[in-house]
Length: 382
Image (tube, rainbow, N blue to C red; front, side, top):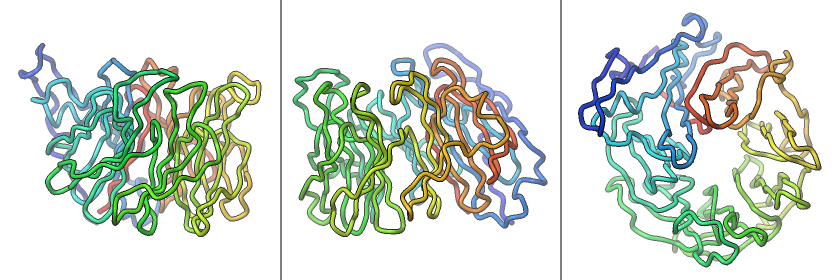
């Protein structure tokens, strides 16, 4: 079995001389479980995963962690130690994280950039400047990035529509732009079309309620699918459906999970559950949420939806009582091979979070400290 070693984890201390003040960074490696149990008896092609910690807006505290699935070692703040000469480190508010080809892409919303790194060492290769960028997906050598296309500004009369920026991944340059609705969030690319969840998040009380459909070949918006207010997450399953979460208006219109029939490109229905983040694994949609819902100020749920029957299987996949210790479930990922469930706890948003690992039966295997507001996963394959 091939193991990938990260040179950035070898030094114990790195002195940083190019920042405003001299600082010393420790990669902080922790053995969270015995290495011999790392593959759970499964021949893994997944060697590990990155975890992007958002950090609070304006705090410049977005950080990148890495977990080695083969050795069960957790490495914190690896961007800082891999790139000691980069001022301000990773930046302000990490909003999305994806691997494409040999590169790792981190969308840093508050800093208005996509940070591009080597997928195996996290060493910086460059950056793509995109104002108020949100989420990223890839197709045939290009990256597609949603952008609010303007400053951070909460204003019901906000007039700046959003867009999708098309990026050449070889040149790391923006080559085209397609307008969308207001404040676009996640996007998905299916059979030559880009689907974009428009939120209108700056425009309360009158938010957006549409998914923009963009033709990849012409890179133009060809229609909008209207159905629910303040759309957010958006992923395609293997049955011809696009799953979309809506956040409502935080008052009398509640958050829901919806699906779009991609054959007809029309709203197919909804399930009355709130979703902050979700992960599709086969026919199962794993989701988590914490916040106000249906008159409850602190509604917390960790559930599974059957995407074939389109119904909730469980509202709590944690079976050993660990759920009582989790404050703010925020990010979720399911290992495609072992079916272990990784769940993050934002833990109040202003202090280091926690990453939990559960087996497929919902029993905790371990937990470890992360950076502030742990949120976005990117699997690293052989």
